[in-house]
Length: 442
Image (cartoon, rainbow, N blue to C red; front, side, top):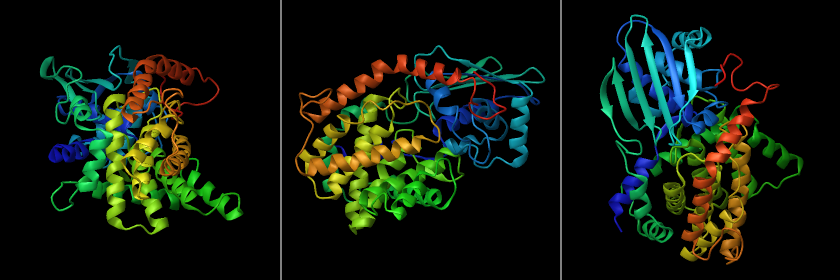
């Protein structure tokens, strides 16, 4: 076991972000291009992005604004983004810069098109200035992975699509991690010598956004609705309901564009929340010690990263199912389960919620997350009693690693058709607004 590499994987695949990561990646691409645009004001901004990017950025709130959509994310990144802040790129945008972004969009200077790249995560932004200068940047494969930069026709950076410029490749992660390796790492981790600073951070930061969501008025208010149901006696004031409310509250605040940071897992803030908050909540309810909770959170996030290394960062299937599978494994560990029972949790989860559709990032992602959290506990409780979906059933196999392979095959081979169809349906909704009222259609 390469402990140092496992720590590096964790710290690479978990990072701070504000708001939904697809709008953030769009803004970061635009800000990168703006760094290389000489001359005066922006006269034209052109976005070419993959279907997955449009799907996930269309209805997700942009932090610090009342806007949603690809065009507003790109415009704000171009006029107010700071590249050094990465996925918190527009955190410091001023009211004047937000207004300038609105004017850029409303003037018709932002153009959008769907890229023909086969890469699921692909954003290509070109800027032109009023005095004839031009700049272009491309982010692909991961949300901060700049693979191409151009300035007035001169190519400054050009990496093959699929290259991870600064990070660890999916292939390396897939070769390094397994359910067994993860379990053994967590059992033997030493917080004095293993660099797990992102686990410390995910516990602190994602607990905080959960508290913000619980205290505020965001989106569908799913956490509030669960609490109201508990008060009315419709739901129990128990371990599972509390974890559902806590987790959904964090996701609700995030999808509404609350200007509060989150620690992501595999490029997704919602998945960072889903892989972490249920375990924090359960440990609090059951008064389980902090060290056991820390190890369970580590296991959960590593399992999610492990599945994503084959599943990809974006898919036609809902990523909450992946993070909740990690959470279910973490719950098993938190409650004293063994390696075999962690594997049972994987099989139970992927035998249950594997088919949940991703129809874009939006407010009701938090509703899907609450569903997945409920299922995570149910599957964990089954696993702890050695109850597991049989290998004769559906995509499940005896070996949880083979079940994961079957699940990721569904996501990888089935996504192109699903993604295109979902985007087509979203764009065809004539009678209901998509994104901000002022947002241009693709």
